[in-house]
Length: 195
Image (cartoon, rainbow, N blue to C red):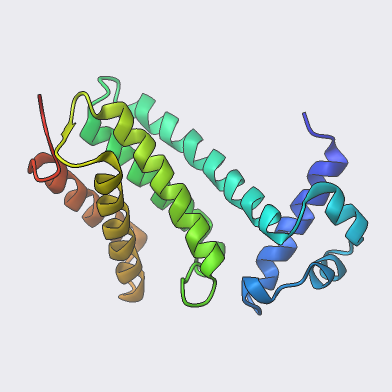
């Protein structure tokens, strides 16, 4: 278990970084500026992180942990039989929940402005969906490689969510419509088939 002072210092650095993103692109934020704003010395920063990329990866790890907890809870609540399509919908739900609860951060995930943040986010989502696809491939036989199916689902649904936000749709509308699309694709046997 991490020392309370370490936890507090890391929390301050993460919050400061997220605050700085309101005014600056991630690539433009310096360690010096981050430490000055956080009231923490550079020595202290480097005691905990190698660089700002290490820090943002820790932010993503916190959100991933939050998502995994939500996913386990959803699976326990509504998928005791481990239906693979329901599992995908639960995974989508947990991603959208983390996204909406941390929207002040995720609104900065724009490939044109913050390419590293965008790449890191999509990489983690792809990895989570790929892992899920691997676990259900016995009950939903993939017609294509797991990686291709994962990429199709992730990029398509991420684009759908982004366009929904642009159109000022509520997260509940986006969630409902995205789950309809996901179920439709998975039940259509376009990407997978049941044994």
